[in-house]
Length: 291
Length: 291
Image (cartoon, rainbow over all chains, first blue to last red):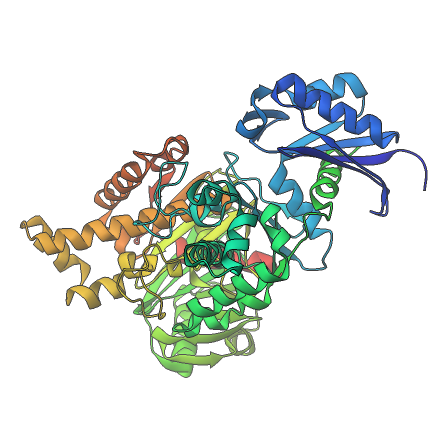
């Protein structure tokens, strides 16, 4: 197909993933470039991605961390962005309609495009833990920009302190940033030590599975989606992660006929971070513009 | 107004509340009769309510505890109902279109009709704890009938065991049934003892506020509604309950700028159980039938 495409830009902490999507949803072009930090850096990185796609734009959708409010980005801490009118900046330079939303909610739209399920939650296990919820094809945005921030539900008042100030949040157990802080090394090294028989490393992996399982239960008991897709950097563990979370779900359901009846371990799927659901979902954000 | 009305029947554990709703949403008639137990008893109780309303029916909406699936009621334990084709039974006897849904999800629709908020959660603190979530005027039904069952999120692995088999569920702390079991007396007696200075009774009330506050946070971090209305039998505590939950929310937010920024204590409202939101919401269920 030719003609203008829906561009989707997923701005991550280290790289910008971008796709150009045809009307039928197939990917016409796909690129990746490094993320520059700061307000100006982020705008430059997004423009570089748009140039690299080299495709006329019907709409431009951008997924980016932080609190989003009418095309403006607030407090994207990992990107060094305090406040940025991203939609305005890109629109002024490209002339195409621009939609901006939180990266996890954007990825949830991308995940939903991969399934026929009517309702879906996307649980992102990255540096932090957050989710996007899609019901009847629409992402739940919430009234103040925190829909899906289930990483900050506390599941154990005696647990370690979270960066948010609470104790025992899901994110403390299942977020890559917190795991690296507690272990003094990134998850991949923890996993290697666990494979070598290190008990403290195995405990961290067990906590990760327990935290992720609690996130799955929170999503199921709040909105009861057909499928819960799990993505983000930690999802690179792939099938091992799936089986560890399924095990934690089954252990919790062991004494509870109610939980067992929900068959949650059958509802989870792992999305590879190499899959471009963040950028695809960002491209679908553009459909909101009615262009 | 005259002509056929939308009838709404809220089947509770002890009584059936019913309203006849005019096209403009005003209540034309309102009745209450005792609930009989068992499949036949529930059908008789609903028919008695319909007769007592003495109003021609455009639609009949019924809210009832239990898992609902295409007009059938499963496992409404407190009503002694194992399985009942309630929509079919009432339709055969009355000839009007019948919609059946879970009582809490029905009440959420009733609560939503009282506010201009675009999104709302209704948190029911009754014998058990459950919620209904309304986004853009529609209740989230979920894929397997458990949307809103946040009472069974565990907030403390060392907490008391819940009837569901898990430990430290929100319902263990904030459900009337569990409170009565733990205290050996109903909540009203516990509250009297707390007023008289009994420390164990005060501890139970503090647990109630802590559990309800955790429910409010779970709803806020999952779907971020503008308003969280709190109803059910425990809501008879009224303003005291509101201020106890607001206090528990504020204490949890004390060390967390993130939680504090959500201003959850400003989002909660108490609905009096004397308000007929369950029956009104049931009447609104009938609008799904397109009759």
